Image (tube, rainbow, N blue to C red; front, side):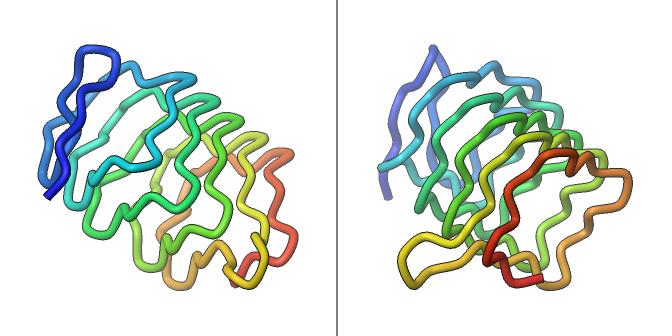
Length: 117
């Protein structure tokens, strides 16, 4: 288990990050599996390769975030802002969105090139 401190927030498995301001942060190397990001600000954050399995992402702001190569299958992204987010293919890995809840999500200008929908 890896727990890291970013912008005054402790990020680790099951962390309560509701409403956290993590904009512009680099979360590579963090372990936020099962964390609650409800309403968090992750604009321009680098989440490339971060394992978000079991995380709650309802209403999260991911505008311009790098989510390339992530597995978001089955994630609840209801009302999430994915405007301009990078959900593109990275080498042989793809951003997986199978069965993800994207109801009311904003995908305007999101890069879905090579994403598995």
